[in-house]
Image 1: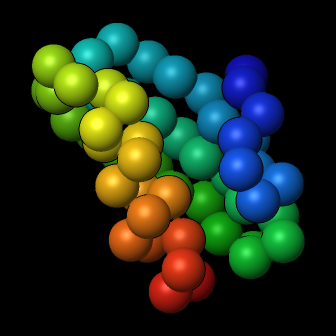
Image 2: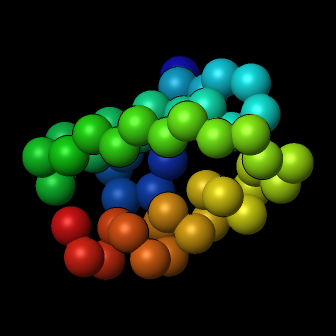
Image 3: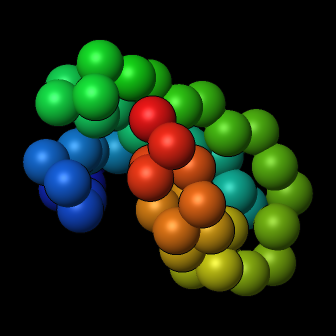
Length: 53
C-alpha cells in the first residue's frame, strides 16, 4: 500500500495493475494494464481523472 496525492492510497501490481482508493472523493479506481511506463500511467490518472471526480 502506498500513500498518494489528495489523501488517496493505492496497491500496485505488476506492469500497470493498480487499485487507487480516494475516500475524500468517494471513489475507487481499478486499472488493469500492461504498461512499460508505470509513472506516466499514474501521472495521467492524477492529472486527468482526479480533477473530474
